[in-house]
Length: 352
Image (tube, rainbow, N blue to C red; front, side):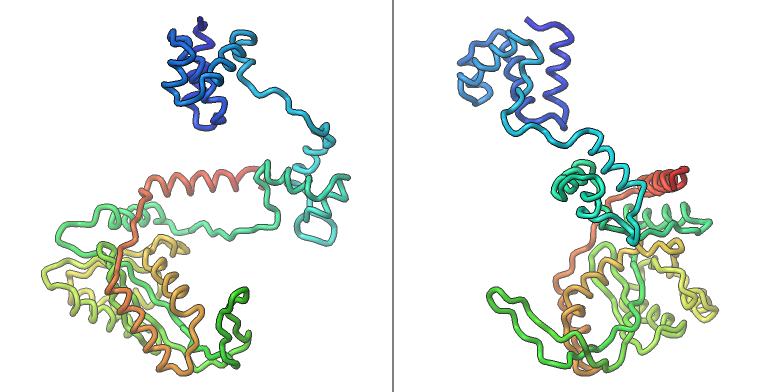
C-alpha cells in the first residue's frame, strides 16, 4: 500500500529526465507491485528477473522510499573536504594567479593543497573550464530586432512567388603554394606540410546561396567594389527566372549601399535587399557555406598560381551545385531575441 506522497514521489522519479535509470526502474517496480501484481508478473511486464523485483519490493517494505536509494559503497574514505571544494570553485571564479591570466590545475592544486587530478574532477563537476575562452559581440544596431525578424522571416516563411538568396563576399582568398612538397599521410603519421608558403596573389569571391535549394550563384573578381557588386547582381538577374521576385540578404558593407547600386535597384524593382544587423554575420546563411568552402577546398589546398586557385574554386562550386542541399534554419526570431536578452542580462550584473 502506498501513501499519496509516496505515489507522487515515485511517479516523479519515473517521469523526471534527470533521474538515474536505476532509481527510475526501482520506482516502476514498486508502482507495479502496488497495483497488485506478483513478482513474476511484474518481472514479465518490466522485462527483468523476478529476483530483482523481490529484492526491491522487500527493500521498500523495510525502509519505504529510503530503501530504493543506493547504500554507501565500500572504499577509501573521502579525503577532500567541502571547504576545499568550495575554495577551488571560488578561486577559479574570482581570482587569478600571480603572473598568469587563469588558473592551471597544478597551480591551483599547490594553492589549495590537493592533487591536480582532484582539481580537474571538481572543475568537471561544476562545469568550469578556465583554459577556454570565447569571443562575443553584442550588435549595437538600433534596428537589431527589426532586422532579425526580417531575415529570419525570410528563412522560415519565404514569400510566395519569390526566391531568397543569402549573399556575401569572401575577399582576399590567397593562392598559397608550400615551399616544400606535401608529404602524404602514412599509417600512424598525418599529412605533413611546411609552415611557410609562397603567395601567388589573391581573388575575391561573390556568392549567393539559394536558401530553398542550396544552389550557389558565384562570381570571381579581382576586387569587391560597388561596381563589382552591381555586376554580380546583374549576373543573378540573368540566372534567376524572370517571373520571380528576388530577395537578397547581405551585410552592411558600404559597397552594398553605394549610389551606383541604388540606381541599379531602381531599374530592377524585382530585387529587394535585406541587410543583416551590424556585427551579426552569424545570421547570414551563406557564411555557413563559406565555412564548407574553407574546410573542404581552401584549408589544405596547394595552388601554384592564381589560375590554379580560380580553377579549383570553380570546380568545387560546380561540384557543390551538382549535390546541393539547403541549410535548415531552426531558430525563430523570438528565440534569438530572448537568448540575446538573457545574455545581456547576465553580463550586465554587478559581478561583471
